[in-house]
Image (cartoon, rainbow, N blue to C red):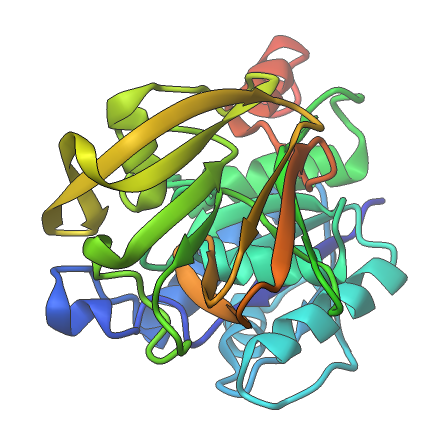
Length: 324
């Protein structure tokens, strides 16, 4: 009958970029409404079994209660630490629960954390974050219907597309990953996480270079666009003496960024960078590199499998699933 996982990050869409830029706020009431619409769409598509991470604010649990009706819902065991470890733990629990599709509410950081727990997860990511390059800006009602169609198998196979990701091997430490970009800056501390000081950028590897996005991927996109589906990525080196690009490094914030070089890279091609500095993944500072400590970055097709919402609904229309 199909099983849909549900995860909403209560912290997404609320970071410091609301103060220093002009990013939108996604409060928990709106997230609850989005989850309700996802459930309604999934029910219309014939999926009635849901497994969910019971976040500290009860976003998904309350949405399920408000929908009511013929819904079978089970909470998974996961941590309640109020940070990314909760998302990683929930991803592993939803994987163990054998979810056919997982709908996530968050931004790039939320989905990166989820994929740290379940790298090849079948995902339908809905944007409720700050930098929303990876998740979709989509109506939750029809997104839920697409999730239900894929989860139940009513439209067959072929509606999950494997995404690129960046594998990060840090010398002497655990490996890491990014879905969109990995950047090394001259900063020495993780701090408030957001990347807001272009003069401290040193180098970056991008899985896609999108001039229509915001964040580091936009810098690359305004220099040399590379599509999300292309079997390549882009390497950037920053500093004076090259080109200056005026790019939206955060929602509502354009800054001049100095780029000395850029180079398209094939899949599985490795680049190296070394400390001291801070590694940022998908727009947020995460790891500190000590002096001379090396990190090796490689783009591959080891990322999550994302639902193609338009294709799923077009197929449903072709075979008349919603016709009476």
